[in-house]
Image 1: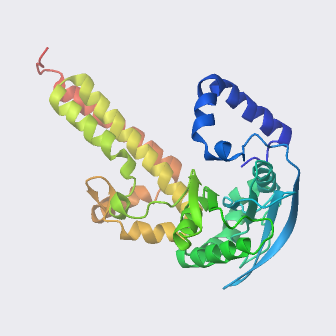
Image 2: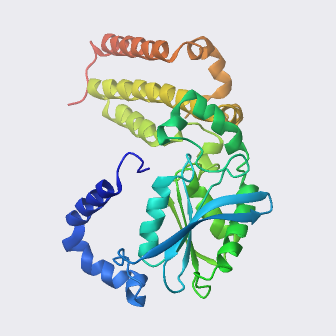
Image 3: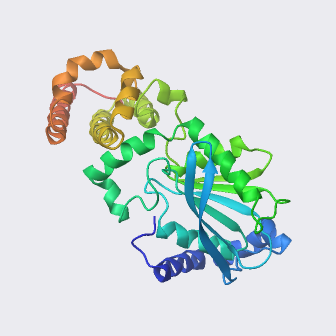
Length: 326
């Protein structure tokens, strides 16, 4: 998240973003944000805070976390779910800023079943091969049922803290991997959690088109360009279609390799369930392309480039002597 930035650099970035929209959004925010109307304004970032490391008993063990809150009074609580690298100094900084705005903030370590925080010495470490191998069994333990149990325990723990105003609803926020955890928190205790926010959440969609087609995000472009080609009946339309299809294949190769590298057996199990690898291309037919899929990624890109040149040449040859509407 913000590991590579100092707190001062983060503040300068935030101020630059505010400057862009200050004139247009200031009045609207003043009217729309409930916290402003209630006297708990987000601009109270200079409020003194106190914090402590905490241990929370859950049905599955003891979770470690970081709890920060305004030094005086009782305040609405927020559960902050971190990204894949879990609880670390970057999230303590983020939580402290939020506490300065008038909230009692609990940052949790979702991996407590496997190891206490911090999980890595640096954020970049999780991207390494060793980091991925370390995380795989930890992430496997974070089932929907496990997160639901944890969420209930965290809500109950917050309600027992003197710094928490239990007459106010709890908020839940999560980043990347923590995005769906924030939503599961709201589902686990809807009577206490009044708001949930997922920031670039991962794994939020497991049904719908993803249940039958891998990479469905390209389906609309694929259909649109196909229609443009058929209706336009012009050489440029054919070239555009071939270019889009080959670009699509190149992106698919990249996404397949990244998903396989990052998620390993979990992605391979999903891949084996999905009937289609791309729109209109059944997984069973992929056996015909097995020799290509077995090649290194760089060689697969070369194969796509060869396919592109071949299709363009075939299109030129086919269309050369044909007349098209003007």
